[in-house]
Length: 122
Image (cartoon, rainbow, N blue to C red; front, top):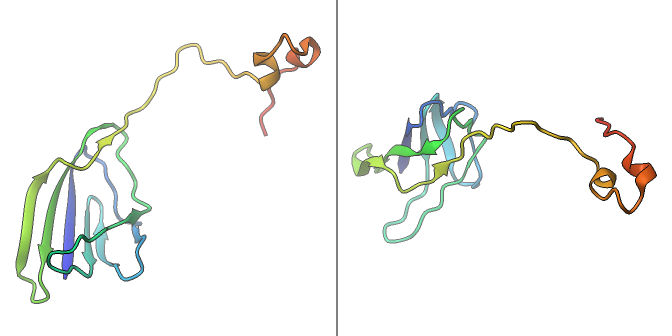
């Protein structure tokens, strides 16, 4: 069987580098916001799909997908064109007056000498 997923919202999903996290699932086509998989789907049993290496959109918000499953002959088995029961994509965080502190600076009262040392990166 095959499973086709089209990310509709928010704009910017990229499945082009997607790999599957489950051994017997294969990526058949992955292009921008659309991915088609070959999967083993058994009627009446839960099927788990795990995507790896999906680039998420630069903005957050509610997600919406079009999901279609097809049988082995290519006929549509199930279709949901506006699935919104997935997840809420986190947005970005803007920090005003960011401050980088070492653990010693945070606990200055325990060792004032070490607290005077500046944070180093690298």
